[in-house]
Image (cartoon, rainbow, N blue to C red):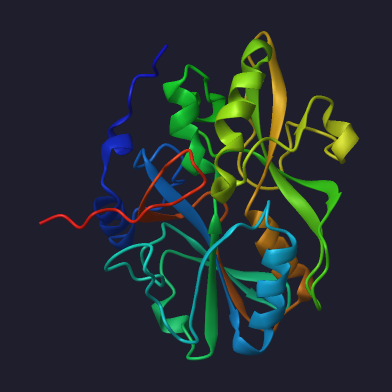
Amino acid sequence: MFTKQRPEATALPREARARFRDGLDTATGGWSHGFVQANLVSVPRRYADDLRRFTVRNARPCPLLDAVGPGRFTTGLAEGADLRRDLPAYHVWRRGQLVARRTDVVDLWRRDLVTFLVGCSFTFEPVLERWGIPLRHLEQGRNVPMFRSNLLCLRAGRFRGPQVVSMRPIPADLVRRAARLTADMPYAHGAPVYVGEPREIGVRDLSRPDFGDPVRFEAGDVPVFWSCGVTLQEAVVRARLPFAITHAPGHMLITDRRVRGTGEIPVRRRER
């Protein structure tokens, strides 16, 4: 079974980034099939070492793809990309409080910012679709629902907090297939961390996600939870840093790196 492909699915990463730079504000689930997507977190340099240690200690929810800075806004993951402008939406934080939602942060960029790019589960969604696993949030035109869980991360300095998980309703007879397909993609969080009763991991109401949108279950679906890169954002927010910039949940950097099921993220060949 194959899902009918949406127009944004065939957009090359550079085309998608150009549209976001021009002001398109949209969740990136379903965009640029076959390419790796990444969460973004930018913090002042004085906090960067501890935040890097946090990603190392919590590699499943925070698989580190790149760290750049201080002050830089380019990455080898995406040729010609400007990390200040080429995501659809950003959140700006001051002492743990969300103070702005922006489609670019050029005027807020600082010379001391270090930027971390970590993997995203949107990367593996086209693989699931290709193998006949429906994705309800895309079918319903919504952002994937994300929840704070009771699964605690290992602390690093002032950074701590719960693991954030994304949830997808999956037909019960396809859960094993979904787990096998994603297990080989640790750079996109790997296999699910939990399947079944949400309360067991501290999720009380699937209709009220902490981030993203609620989704409708179909007959035979069960909730399947994957680690989520918003975990890193949550740790930064709880640390109450004087200043930080993150992606808006679900609004990712689309990189030039192609998806492979081997755990590797090979560099895309440069087009002539």
